[in-house]
Image 1 (cartoon, helix red, strand yellow):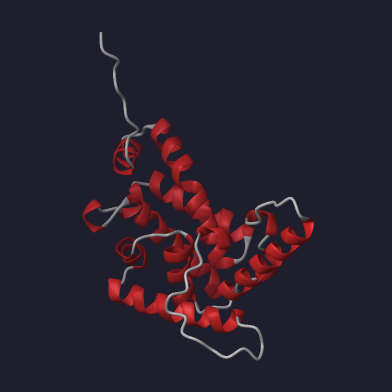
Image 2 (cartoon, one colour):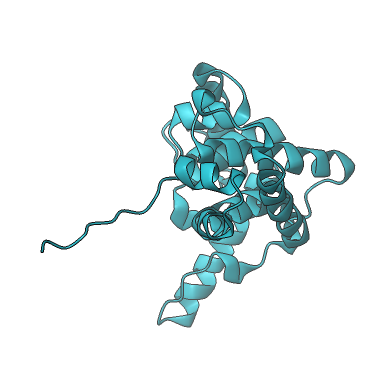
Length: 201
């Protein structure tokens, strides 16, 4: 008898099962997406407490009937980022992002040389502070596209705007980051090609 081949259900299938009361499906989707949603909220807010609250609220929205997800408007991942984004922005309206709350251990990758590790942590801290210093509409484009590597289309669905808007915000956000991270006295240069990547944060 040939072996039975099984495949992991995709996000849409898990969400469908969640709406039918399947607790295992909820656990599976949570395990699959919670790290990304938490990092997004942390990178947007600079606060671990805010990130934890946002994470809980995002998945509570799923329990309460899917939170208005419409498969015709994009993926479940884009929807979750969109819900998280709206909740983070409401938090930021009440309180600006405190850069000092982002812990280095969230992002630092250990190296054998302590001096190299210290230099890397200082670089990470500088990038974190620069990202948190961006206006929110530029920050969210940089975080989603550069740090989480979402395609422009998915980022546009999460942010509720056109792909062209995402591109222009990302371009401007990269320019602002380059200016913030440029050593004093160093001449400016075009930053359109700057990309942070997940290793930076």
